[in-house]
Length: 472
Ligand SMILES: Cc1cc2nc3c(=O)[nH]c(=O)nc-3n(C[C@H](O)[C@H](O)[C@H](O)COP(=O)(O)OP(=O)(O)OC[C@H]3O[C@@H](n4cnc5c(N)ncnc54)[C@H](O)[C@@H]3O)c2cc1C
Image (cartoon, rainbow, N blue to C red; front, side, top):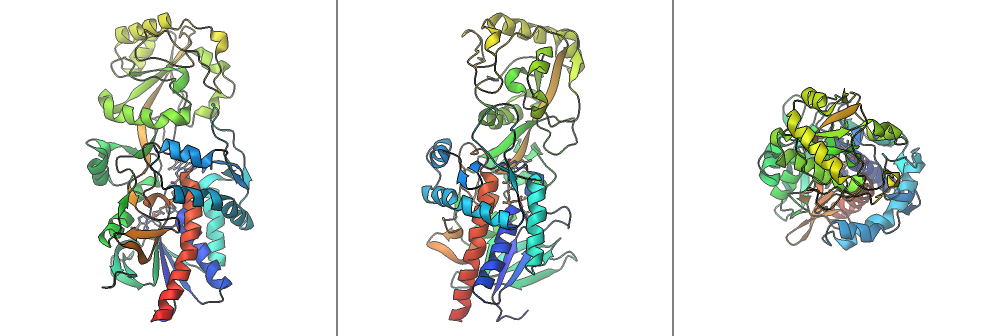
C-alpha cells in the first residue's frame, strides 16, 4: 500500500458502514483530495449486511423531510433521561438531510402500514433493509470503493501517542494482515451474536436467546472489544437489548406474531404471567420477549385466541410466521395440541372470561381501547379484554428472539469514539456498536441512527485523516 495516500478503513458493511464509506468517498471528492477507502466485512458476500439486510427499517419520521413530532422528548423519556441530548439533537437535525442524501442515491420512501396498533409516524425505504443495502452498495461501487468480504477485523493498531494508525485483519485465507489507515470507522454491530458476552452482560440463560435474523449472528461484539482495548469508554445499557416475540416453528427471518395484546398468553403450565394489554405492541414487545425467555418454564409461551381474531381488520399484518396457529374446537383439545395441562388452561380461560365484563363493542385493536378486565384479575389485562368463547380456539407458540444489544462504546455527536481523555484520534463509530440506548429501545430509531451517524462518521474520518496526514 502507498502509505502517503490518506486511507480510511471501515469495518462492517451494514447501513452504518455503507453510509460511512459513501460519505467518505464523497467528502474526499468534494475536497478534491485523493483518499483510499477500504470497506471490510467478516461475512461472505451475500451473507454480509448484518441486521440491516433483514430489517424492515421503519424510521421514526413524519416524512423524509421531518422527524416525528416529539422526537427528542420521546427519546429522552424512553431512556429515562439517560440518552446524550447532544447526540439526540444531532440525530434529529441531520435526519432530513440524510434522507435527502439517500434519495439522491435512488432510495425511495413510503409510509408503511404498521402491524395493527397505532404508534409514532414512520417512514420505510422501499424494499426495506435489503433494498437500502442494494442501493447503497451500488453507490459505493460507483464511487470506486471495493468491499473485501470474509475479512474479519481483529485488532486496532494504536500509536504510542494514542491515535489509531490501522487495523489487523484475518483474511479469508486465514492469514493475518495489516491495513495501515489514518482513520478507522467501526460499524460492526453489537454483540447479539455472541453467547458468551450475552450471558456476561444480560445474565444466565441469555446465551440461548435465538437470533431474530440470519444476519444477527455476525454481530459478535468484535468492534466493541477492539475499541475498548484501544482505550474507548464503554457506554449504553449493558443489560439492555431489543427482543421480540417470534414463532419458534417458523423458518422465516423475524417471524413475529404480534397478536398477543388481543389474546391471553400462558406459560407451559397453562398460567397467565403478563398483562397482555399493558400498552401498544411496540411499548410491550421487548419486556414480553424478555419475560418469556428469562422467566417462563422452558422459555416458551402460547398466545391463546378465539375466532373473533378473524373480525379484526388486517389481523394478518401482525403475523410474520408462515406456520398456521394450532386450532381446536375446545380449550382442552387446544391444550393437548400444545402440550399444556388441560385443566390448568381451562381454569385460566374460565377465570379470565369471568373478569372480562366490559362492553365488547368498545374493542378497538388500533389503539388502547380501555377495555380492561375487572381489577381482581391477576395479572391484569388493561386493554382489549374480550371473552374467549368463540371456537375455533387458536394458539401461537412464542419465544423471545434477540435483535440487538444496547451496550457499546461511547461516541459523541460527531461520531468520534471517546476515550478517557476525549476523542481517540482517527477513531469513529456508528450504528449498533455505539452505546446510546438505555432501558427500552426507542421505537424505529436504530436504523435512523446507523445511517445518520454512519454518514457523519465517514465525512469526519476524511477530515481527520487529511489533518493527520498533513501533520506528518
Ligand atoms: C429483524 C430486524 C428488524 C429490525 N427492525 C428495525 C426497524 O424497523 N427500525 C429500526 O430502526 N431498526 C430496526 N432493526 C435494527 C436495525 O436494523 C439495526 O440496528 C441496524 O441495521 C444496524 O446497522 P449496523 O450497520 O450498525 O449493523 P449491521 O447492519 O448489523 O452490520 C454490521 C456488519 O458488521 C459486520 N461485522 C461484524 N463483525 C465484524 C468484524 N470483526 N470484521 C468485519 N466485519 C464485521 C457484520 O458481518 C455486518 O455485515 C431491526 C433489526 C432486525 C434484525
